[in-house]
Amino acid sequence: MTRVLVSIRDPYLESSKLTTYLYDVNGEKIGEVELPDLFYYPIRKDVINRAFLSAFTAMLQPKGRDPLAGKRTTAKYWGVGYGLARVPRLPNGTARFVVSTRKGHIAFPPRPDRRLREEVNKNERIIAIISALAATSRVDLVKARGHVFSADKLPIVLVDDVELKFSKTKEVKGYLEKIGVWSDIERSYERTRIRAGKGKMRGRRYVEPRSVLFVLTSYDKPFAKAVRNLPGVDIATPNNLSILHLAPGGIPGRLMVVSKSALDEIISKYKVVYL
Image (cartoon, rainbow, N blue to C red; front, top):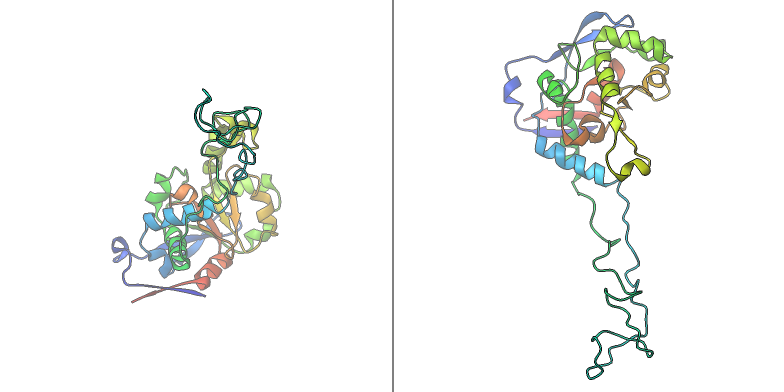
């Protein structure tokens, strides 16, 4: 269990009680679920952005040429009095080493020791995840991020039987329409476009907007396999839920659909204690 000590709740939620609907296997509301304390956490967009940059830049691979490339030569400076440019030369007079010569080194090449990753400490990363989780319950933030849905309370919580009932994508479509998130998947499909620039030739030809985040207890459940190929959909479990899932691009407010057991696991993993 990860405990985070905070001194205040979000002042906008002090007098309100956060609840969301619980949906059954038929897509109907069968009750309400009271959201735990972590969903009252203030939305720290600055911390979320730093944690996202840290996770995103961790995937970058350092690259650069050999530091001695173009410098392995016996050429040396001859001195003055030859009527030639004052650059290192071989015994036959051929210039070497400097940037403007053939087989010379490149000016300011990429360096393999360049610092690429944004570093954040563990507590800061945990606070960012909790804050991003809290943002998934704010309807205004989710709409501001561009998601299209008809539900009036977020996140959308499903009974555990849903993870076992659906095994095919065509079966899932009707269910997602009932709970009000299919329109967001259609938005991702309609806005998928070809990337501008050379990325088209490097295995990232299409830009696909993010749509629904499904947080389930396991990747092997039939429901997870049924929704994994839908446009813009991400699937996560409570154990590997990261800031990349909750705030793509560093912007909080992801549209999240979570099973009841997965929500309980998240609650037990991140315990917020208010002082």
